[in-house]
Amino acid sequence: MLTIKKYAAIDIGSNAVRLLIANIIEEKGKATRFKKSSLVRVPIRLGSDVFMKGKISKHNGERLVDTMQAFKLLMKSHNVVKYKACATSAMREASNGDKISNRILENTDIKIDIIGGEEEAAIIAATDLNSYIDPNKTYLYVDVGGGSTEFTVIHNGKSVTSRSFKIGTVRLLNDIVKNETWHELEQWIKTHTQTFEKIDVLGTGGNINKIFKISGKAIGKPLTYFYLTSYYNMLQTYSYEERISELDLNQDRADVIIPATRIYLSAMKWCGAKDIYVPKIGLADGIIKSIYYDTVSSNTQ
Image 1 (cartoon, rainbow, N blue to C red):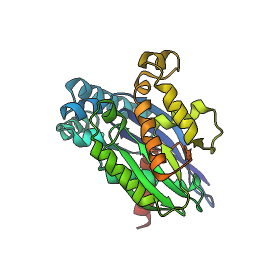
Image 2 (image 1 turned 135 degrees about the horizontal axis):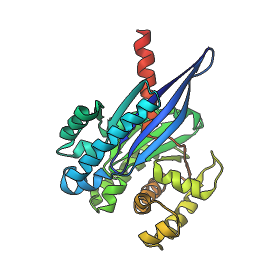
Image 3 (image 1 turned 90 degrees about the vertical axis):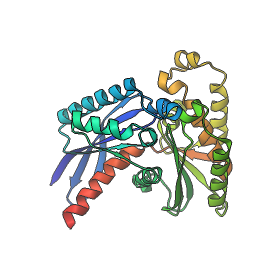
Image 4 (image 1 turned 90 degrees about the horizontal axis):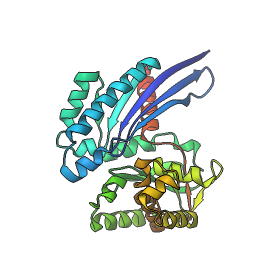
């Protein structure tokens, strides 16, 4: 017997806000499948407010409430049976983050969980990476966001250690990442990867997805350090406007793609990786899985 349910994940990031709707396909005798049905992305860039001024502006607060109202209607139209909304760096650090999440609850009935960096790393790491990785290899998993980047060392299919650093694309654009933070990240990566003979990087996030798509590489094939370096250098020869008009990048992608690439290249350099693999997963996928596994465990108790 086949059953299909729709779950939704709302990811309130520092650069963009996303609604992912997925079909959960259960069939007797087969593994549960998770299939993306719809993805809506709204570039509110809360991080520009928060990392510079400490709080979300009135204008962006209103945009966020409107976006959640729209997401609620979309979930209703799609017949979503369960959802979970998580907010990361920007909402976490905003002095008015709780106030705005309460306003959203009052106006839309959507409850937002403001999660910590380590919890964010754990949700992403639980996104069923096994289907994307070789269990005999070692990886440094790098998920670049607007406010923070999550790093996880995976050895023989198991997560060994993970950590969140306040190095994100929106922070870098606003020039508010201290040299000490970069140094701390470099030391962390070197310390936790030096014992492994060979390591590859797994990169997730909208920017690396875009670079991978542009590269024309086949799914499952990696980008090389050499390719990413030359792409990074090429990007910097174009102005912001030229990246939009000539490279066909969206307005909210054309600026953050450079600091994002810098983070991936730094991670590759410090762990000695020659290749970066790009599985198309992220926090929203992890949220969908967590809803499913929470439901399964509560049903079996």
